Image (cartoon, rainbow, N blue to C red; front, side, top):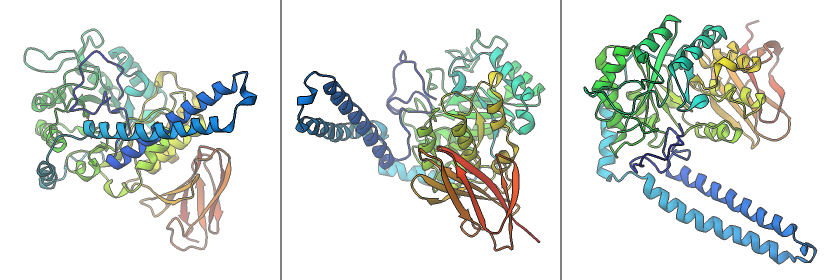
Length: 480
């Protein structure tokens, strides 16, 4: 989550700009962060340079302008890139790095190895549901959440497999009660959280809630650090089925210690609660989070634009080995239907998340979605790829620059295939049965998961693919 609040003091135990599950950047390790920072400053320098040249172009003396002036402008941009990158990266690395010793880091790894695998029997397939943040940020009320829950049922989303209604940050009051317990904001949730959970349950849905493994949430409300037992008991009493635990204001306390503390507290309640870790992918959570959670964020917050989706997709390469039934990589919520990307891009976004065996957590206003948005979110052929019981995350098998091929092995021996075109023009793409790992067969049945049409192929899987779009197929070997 990204918070626009600037009124509360910032605790530098959270990253600079970390006002939600998006700490102002896309985390994923120091080297990857440095690359992103350099890119950002390069783009800014390029924009400034173009602006300077554009202004020169507007002067009356443009025709007399000599080429060295343009060269000077670009030289200035280059120096700005270098200087800004050095200063910014150096400063950010100091702020981003927790002040812990090598011994402490080793102890954290050892702690992870000593923690038994999470055995709560939940999330055997990636969770499907809806979260309030992308559409509403902190502007949530009990009335609005009830309307969303009804819309999930009436739109056909419940029938398609969506079941969690998750309220994100800012549902709580600004202080705990006299017994140290969390309580709902009395104006926005006058009936309290238990009554809301009961209503959602009455619709045949499940209820999820948000907190942070810090002293405050990202929006500045009371956090769960040092209150894990009390808060877990409160959540269980309210009928919570899903907990998303953020990372703001963490006081420099080790990641594993904080999140494992909540996991133990949740298990102790005896209530089945799906546990979702949101530490922004900073400390490679896929290496330790499977032991203590059902899913973990691998990046910072998604944004409703193509570049954000592609950046997050790239960060998933190589993570497929860590996912499986009960434990999932989480590339963040869906932006489908939020209005910035094109429908072609939304189809690609939804298809790729299904390929990744990612949680399918919608983030749009379900009360007012278009027919196209509803058709994307309820495409059962694509959802079946995500929810395949084998729980194998798809992986990229080819990257030709603007063209990529992704494959996901399925429980029945078929393969899900995505031909992805990241370029600016429609292109014709081809793969074949051998490349996608199919067993040799006389022929293959190929189903297009967006047109819902099937055909027989001797070997090739091919299609025209629109710019920023995908062609998605499921391929079976023919037995006859």
